[in-house]
Length: 82
Image 1 (spheres, helix red, strand yellow):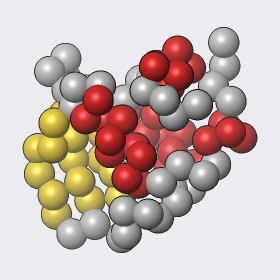
Image 2 (image 1 turned 30 degrees about the vertical axis):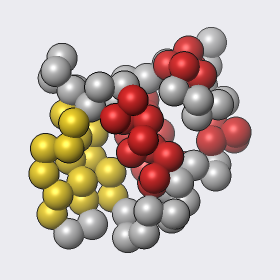
Image 3 (image 1 turned 60 degrees about the vertical axis):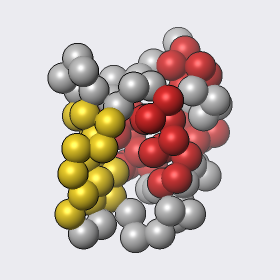
Image 4 (image 1 turned 120 degrees about the horizontal axis):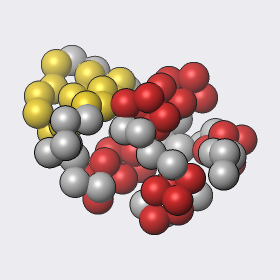
């Protein structure tokens, strides 16, 4: 099933970071507004934000979820993002 991107428009940086921790990612380093997370299987995700409550743009969100974290819609439901 395809990821329903419209329902993810209001995801904040804090929600993404909490989901990354819940999925087993760990914070590797933080430089300025970039936080880099890594998973034991080698996946890497960079979260860019200025305030934890900041809403992430849909393009950046797609790159983080689909390309970097490689989450499916089932993963998003399990992580309570949908």
